[in-house]
Image (cartoon, rainbow, N blue to C red; front, side, top):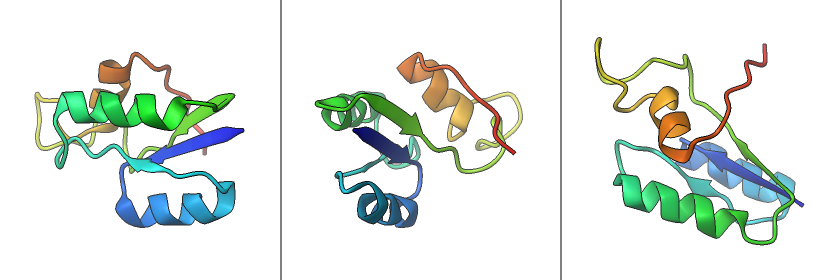
Length: 86
């Protein structure tokens, strides 16, 4: 089974309907680092594949010189590879 994770609450609800699994929002602006990791762990139980969907540009965060709020922050925190799909 596939687990889909998203930085957006709206996208998470759509992915829930598509995948038939509960999804988790991994927004680092709303959650602490520990909560993001707990969400990833909870969502991964029983999954064969985990997909973390980004919200925009990889480094689009709170401002220049910081990863906070960016997809790169989530990738670094969770030690996951990044794949660009256009």
